[in-house]
Length: 375
Image 1 (cartoon, rainbow, N blue to C red):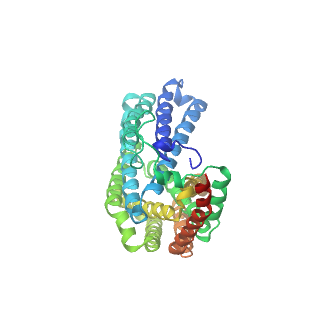
Image 2: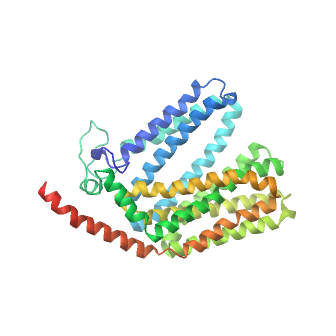
């Protein structure tokens, strides 16, 4: 995405539209899988495509956000982005569960394509920068800033990426992203299993509680998460969120006598997802702040890929932990990743990193300008 684009429509907007179009096709393809609940291969292929193009449009959206959102608005923008994403996820779980129970799996999944069509209208009718085309056949031209930022060779991208990724802050944050991803993966996989198998809830009960908790967390994240990061700073808020979330999980692990109390479980789930949302806002804002606009999509994707790899590792790790330990010890283990990340964040200086990136930009302008004049 950093290498190829149709600049008259923007650096990342064409990729966003393409990703969403492929998502619609992938959702509709569920209808062509015979007996999907008993056809693991067919379901896996379509599931892979949905995940692929979901990540595809995610990368394009985040890359566009890094490109066009001013540094002093990134935290607030992430609060809005992540808050609305959490709300959308929770509502889709609640609606999806109801649709599966009432109209069947195939129709329920295919109906999601309607939602993607509605979402797709936004990037179609709003340009990335002033003066650009809304579609290839409409009037408009490439924005000057887009031309200056766009790289024209793989070697440029790889060299630029290496220059920024080898910095201390990038390395530490990348490792920290993987570690906190382990906690995300463990908790995401654990909650439905723990509540249904251990506490005896139904899948509908869990989806309803999860949806309510996520909506509360999303609203709080939208209106306060980004502002808190802007006001107090990324480092302070990251350390605060990581510390509180570790304490909350530790307290829950030690309070096994209260696990039979549904109200106690409700409070824990709401508290966790609220802290999770606030932490994600701070982490995403920090990742964007560490990105160099020249290779923003590639660099940001690298951080998110490391986080997602951590999620996958955490999901796989739950089976190993549950086989060898009781639930209380599993929760105690989950409290370790945020503590480790908090320690690592102390070694990141965002101001120093930004100054280094600015020096890269100034140097590139000096080296590139004579060639542009010559051309």
